[in-house]
Length: 385
Image (cartoon, rainbow, N blue to C red; front, side, top):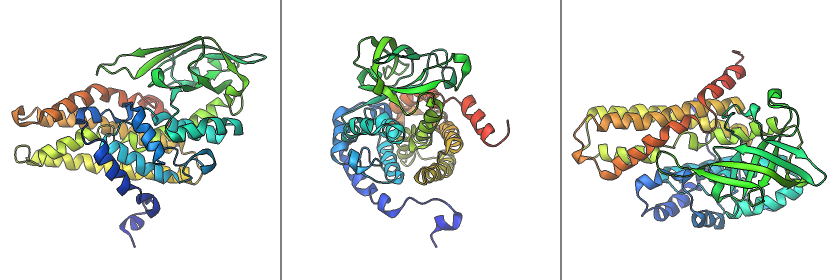
């Protein structure tokens, strides 16, 4: 009996694990010349040509049906791909949202016409989506969104504002959670999801420069934007149920464990050298690995639920909350380690990478839902409130 079987842990099937070797061989060459502090940006790194190459290799939309241009594989296959992309620090930001959640959402709730129009270019790495959930006065409290779509004879008129829309300035589409009836005080009632073509008149995208000097996050303004009737995904008024299913894809994957992994690998390489090795550093490495390992097992178990057709909303929230805690621990603990010693022997690239990750680490517990929101969901799921 395999050790994982005896522990009752979910294993990635052999046919999906077999993807790992060719993906690693490709990535080792593809990112070889990219410095670590750039690779640390990974899922915010925007590289159209890289996304197109992944599409040519059949590594995008791998879980989508073949009839729509996908690979027809299980979520385990995508798990292997994403894990390797993040471990190598590949620039996956261009296709990230479309591949992770927009495509699966359209597959699950979209019309046949929407599937045939939107899914093939996602699989080819040609079509990029951003998320239209958060708003300035809503944040992670998605039920209080105010952006409104009013039904017209021709379709919908969209008015309002979204924020935290990563790479909106370079995306063709947004899937927006909007209010199609009622008021903000009605909470989950009256919410719907629309696909918004960001090239339409009345849309303004304003990038926001962050502390690290990047401009991935954007504000998006809608001023009487005219959308067709086919912009609606699923049923009107069912947006809350749809968006919670979408968030299970967003919250449960390896990206909620490995945002700091390029930094961690750089530091591990340093503490293995004669100049960097010391007992307390090795103990710290063991502490971090001992937290990452069970979280990875939990994340794979959530994937198993997705494979079986479940919607593991609470489990995904738990993985996300615990995962981002470890992701934020990594730069803080490494900084403590490095600054408790003489730094003249520390590699410059390690320090540059630490500087970048330290600047962005506070966002880890914001994106995908804040801790307070997630812990409320977990408590309700456990019957504690």
